[in-house]
Image 1 (cartoon, rainbow, N blue to C red):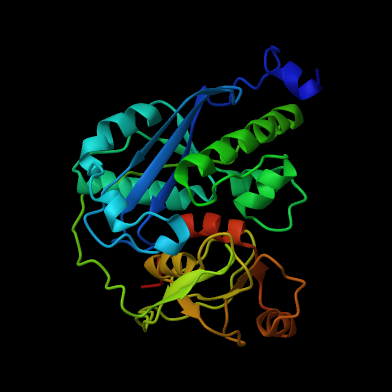
Image 2 (image 1 turned 135 degrees about the vertical axis):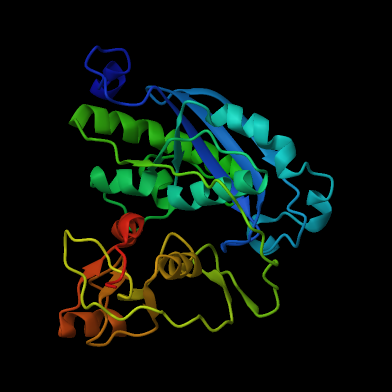
Length: 326
């Protein structure tokens, strides 16, 4: 028995750690504000990360299912599935009193919160834990922030990538050793507050015309050919380390990301940031998971002295973007 296994029953298990977790994965029609959940899975874990049970459901989104080439769920498959309000109570029972755990948890939480708001209910989640942030706290030697890399690090075998039940299983199996490593090292878990939506106004579903079917073996994206609105705020200048982002800052992205690039850009725009397609002396921040790469953006960022952060740090910064100067 290893030291990590001993901690499962030892009195030295951190008293401040949560008493239970709900490892969640959702598949969706897309990544925008008006997209819908089409399947959801929850693995309930006890305080030490042991599996208690699991649950899975399809959900009829009442609209086009989106990137079928990614999740494999066609309109025919989803036609007889329950609507979200019909599974909301069971879903809530799985989340109640637990910390929501997900890989890039802000995405899963936002999709869940929006569905509950549409159903005129509130998801019973007070805190979330992102396994990307946890892997960084543990300084795991991962090549990138993808779930498959975390799984490979712990020897967890993926069977059906982009299937909510298997992705949740994989994450649950990878989360337990991460949790034990954190406990053994006295690492403070990166818990974040979940603020539920209390109201919702539906907007017309985004037409799928113009979306590019560019999914390539898990590394690609499906992206809308659309012109983004101009940022209404003036550029306040460069990002300063250990300071919050400010509305109007110009943010550029480079290289592979674990989250679809469009989703990251949408979040940045919703927060009041300016998403730039290139790097210049006016760029406030470059987001990249590979700062040593020789892409044109990283080379320019270094030459201009533009601050650089990785994807996980950027998603944390998005939580507290300060308003533009009045």
